[in-house]
Image (cartoon, rainbow, N blue to C red; front, top):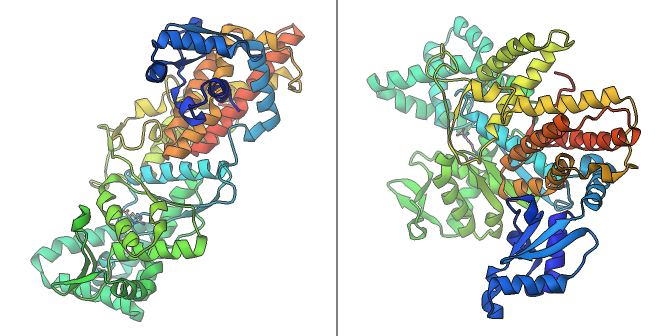
Length: 568
Ligand code: ARG
């Protein structure tokens, strides 16, 4: 139980009509310390008691009386203000953190529940571009948060490895394929396949028959034509190799790569079920599910040539996932432009009679644009994620070279910091907000950035190394009641609720903001309160605080998918 929960508990024991949850929402953090550490406003009880909020605050305060963990509880205007007993508070938080170690921010909410986190899901033969950075990084963080909270997690990369674009690619390859092209594709799969795809699209304008040919080849692929399958398999394999390079850089692994093609043989069953449940309508030879009465546009689930579509594969995928994993939640981290798609899809599943459609969540996000000069896009319009990551590492190497010359593993650190910076920047705002990527904002060692948090973490590591003594929780806690130490401790107290908030709202940025705030508080403490000092008791107490900050910063970064170098 953190202190806020304790305040809620005390308050609701007097004001029994109020639930614990509502009390937690009601509790505020006063703007200045002379108004206490927590405050409960009493406006909402005026109706019930037919009294002024000020009178109510005074009465409730009187009823609460003295409570051990609090130095005082007093009313001020319409507020009941709680002042924690600093020593007691420090002891409680730091002892708990010391005991729980890595698990300090966790709870057991996830026990016995399986959660699927689907993210990244790039399209084969189309670029893995800077836009994909969002789903990849947000998804990975959501997965880590759920895992930390005890869920059984399954990560899925729902590869875009099926669909008419493969008809185009196969047809293009059959027209223009040559040993040189094969070699080029092996070397630079996505880029070269993209070229083929773009060329085919262009030529289609002059040769309308190309469109039919592409359709023909996709149909052949669906029908199991050997040549089509062979080419498709090759395209897929080489593309995956390239994607995996990026995943390795980001330290991301998937439990499953069951993408769109995985469901191709499950289409007939889905179509049959839709038919049997009376959901299909004919529309000029195509099959649709009517959704207008639900405020959505109708969804085409099968084209007139009999081939199935993106949404149909998603229906099959959801059913398969439910049967295979019996999920408690099935989370899709996909951009906001696909909002309608997911609404249609969820409605269809619901109409099929599956109540678990409510457990399927579309976690969407806004777009990222690049500030001028972020990358020279020599490869045309498209910005590749891998290039952004490499550039981040390159730039960080320069910065590190300027700063610190005796670092042993510079290359490794540059990688951790460069990539960490990109991750942190990506997770800094709430998901839905569009943002502009700039190197300056991302890579600075000052301000609210990844390198700043990592640097603070490295600082705690260095202090702990220099101290040359075991840290334990047997310390004089009254030493940690000064303003700076106390502010750090208050921040530490909020870790769990920031993790839970991120979990509830699928918003890793709660944790991003949290760790940068903790880093700032720690640095203030560090500048005001020397840690490695002669006085043994002071040293011991401040080291315990440093150690706790060290553990929480590390865990926080880990939950975002960042690495935490011990020296930088
Ligand atoms: N491949 C798609 C894209 O890059 C995203 C797939 C999202 N997941 C899904 N189950 N539909 O746009």
